[in-house]
Length: 110
Length: 297
Image (cartoon, each protein chain N blue to C red):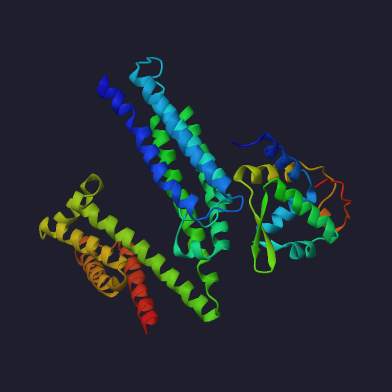
């Protein structure tokens, strides 16, 4: 029923600070990709690629409303717990929000 | 033996009938379109697995597996806990639909409210399921009963809190939001008072712990019929508080009972800690009455 690849994709998608921050942002409610990109310092194509990774892993779903496409959080409880654990375990030394300072090269194939 | 086998197969038969009759609901209406279909299928699959596992236990029992008998009750509790936990895990992925979830007019209208509420519901259900499964595997029967009832009550209270606190935000104007907030406050108070008075009233029928009310009404001296009468007045007044238009009659009846209680405290029983309870209840009743008057005008 559930393909192992899907579970693996979810872990891979969660193993990135910016993507975890996007998921955290979406806890506040659905956003368009433009609104998400505005909240980050990364370029719009980078955010767009991150969103595509998240969508393929099933962690967000895209919902069309008129002209706009809204991204909705679609994580399971287990995936939320994994995200929290990753936040707790991430390497020390960087306090605060790293996403605001760093431009991230798009190293992930979408 | 034949009867036992027939009994053993009523569960999967009932489950299959329910499953097949509900299937068209989400298959036919495109309700679960767009990738969400998998969520609903997953939930249905888990329900099927749960029934199958229960069925396995029953069949093994019918076949007379002796080793199973002592652990079967625990196994059912653990299975139920795991079932709850896996359902809860998928709850945040559900969206408004015809079949499944906390379906009220508001959650069906407001997709964001649905999403938020079901994420919380998912956390609560996973926590409750895990606690129930762990208690079933490890602890005594009393502890299991306690854990199950605490999870049900606590989880219900958390969800009711999230749902009710979301109501004011739905209003568009500040005045409407303020009105809604006051409405919620008055209703919470009404429910609290109703629960308290219903409890006091019913306790009077049964005499109370260590026959407290029986002794107390002996001291008052009108006879035990007065205890039953007071119990009826309090329980009836409590029910009136829960009826939309019953608040003023309910408050009137309960105020009369509390004034009577106050008088007996002052002249017969003597003023004590219980008098403070009576005065507080009286004040809350008057507050509810005034707030309801203000709302209606």
